[in-house]
Image (cartoon, rainbow, N blue to C red):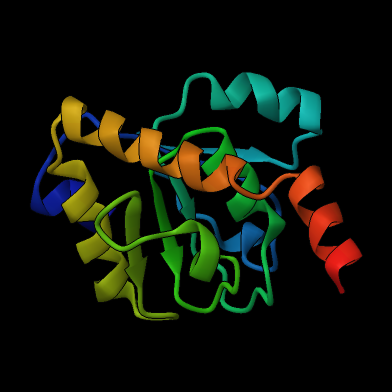
Length: 146
């Protein structure tokens, strides 16, 4: 809401899930609260989305980061998410922000919103390459080597 007030733009925020703060969600015309979605429902929502944002406060790995990278999404993630060490390269396919720091999250959002469509597509391609680099065959190969 603050970001829209500071610099109005056409971007919307679509929120999927029902975490502990769901009952405190703000009402704003540019924020859609979708609630819990089954995988089949989420698949349809993702077709209309452009950037993946995961503001988790604690996420030892976060499989969804791998999934969204493989799906080719530019990303903004909290630095409290373990999967970002493998699937988010700062400035190449997204941005990290400092966990529980609203201003840091706003800055990351501003950065991604300032990118051109060409730059966002390049980030999407980089995410996809990172995401598909870890597949079942690669994991099986590692297990066999151990």
